[in-house]
Length: 356
Image 1: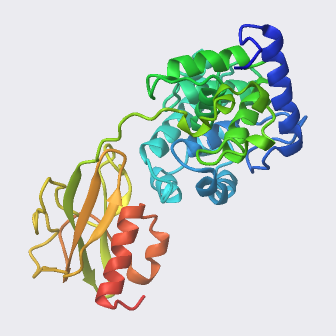
Image 2 (image 1 turned 180 degrees about the horizontal axis):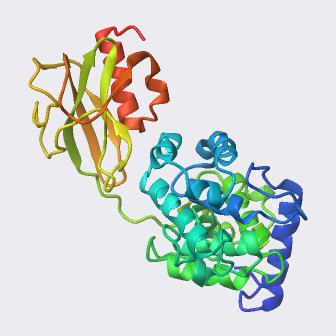
């Protein structure tokens, strides 16, 4: 068993110092991360944290710079066209984040003079800013001492302390430990250091303990049970739902519609669909009374957070009274379709041999 005591302030200071020293040598270079010694830009920090929610660094990286270049400030984003922002967001998933992002930018512009509040409590009052995001912004952008806990931090800290309670119940204990370890100096760097450690060294499988700067304090390593933590809850199988995507073509143009502003994929361009049900709905909800043909292929599969969707594919030619846009088939790549409808469109093009 480890000889040190986690109740000793000296141990906590030494561990934090070791982690920061490692970070200074090995930190990831990310487009939203300020260089060492440079002041962080609050808008950049906020934008990156919103984009990174439930999305990987690899997915956000290529999109972040173009998004920031197009809307470089709260003032610019506050007056942006909703449809343009949703189109630029396409492919990042969890589209409610984009709607909350717009609402937040408008609140900052209207209620805070375009300046982001600098405390956790004030940040939490903004649309789409929860506990994690408020803590991350407060620490990274403003140097506030805050307990920042994302998935990487959960893994690192649950292993350091061998926290055996399954998630999500363990999160209270994990956050308390993070609060103990976070130093008053460089709290933003400390938060990013822990995230980098989880991403680069303390990985879910086969962690590189020999390279870890805090290995000597890790209880899980001492007992040889690193991969046991964090303890996951019993996984439930996601329910399955079914729908039909409709491809209505007229003169090399296909009908696209706007999904309702609220709800799943709200405000996004999409192919028309009928209801999403527990059983295949057939041609219910077709956008016209054309002679619809259900295509023989299996359909399009897509996983959402709480359910798995199977979309059958139906096609016809003609016009429709349904409100929408007739989009050139050859330019569908610029329509900003969310992933499930982009896949459906690609399946239609492949199945029908449409010339783009």
